[in-house]
Image 1: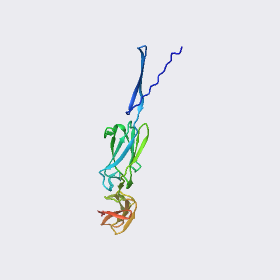
Image 2: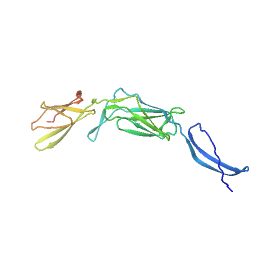
Image 3: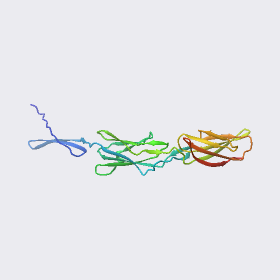
Image 4: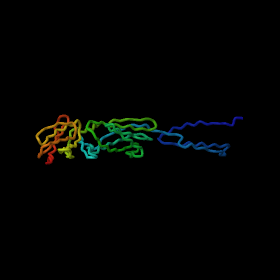
Length: 241
């Protein structure tokens, strides 16, 4: 005698979610057992309508710097990127690419609910090099990964907006050598130095060492060019006697 039996059931889910399955059996009206399978069904709503925008940004960003470990660390003012997912469930993570070879991963727990079906997240980023950048985003759920590109192009100027001229000195046999270091942020920088004896020297290095066997009393100045455009001059440091 075959005591095995089975049953088929059809059901249509209308809302995204994770559902348990419970099966109960009875014989002639008497319950003989039940079994529950946790998270038996996952109903996922596809991701649609991804929008990425830049909030409150200047038309062109300037690079500024702080001096750390004898080098200039360049960065723009903070840029706020806003990503909205119009519809989608079971979002797992979002990878936001800033367009400058940097990216960040935002977990779903950091998203905020923008409406009953929409999600939003805001990310802050600072650019460290000149150029034109167009951020894009990848959003993933168990069904698929969807991508979106911002319509706004972020432009970071390659023209220096600030220059700091620093003097270093150390003694050498029979003469004193003085090193000047210019700190600036930008692209393709060229440094034009004016020495106390009136000589002009152009370098692509931001440091200049100079010495003289004669006593000098003068001024040293530097101007910085970006792509052949004079940007700014830093007034002179007193040459040591």
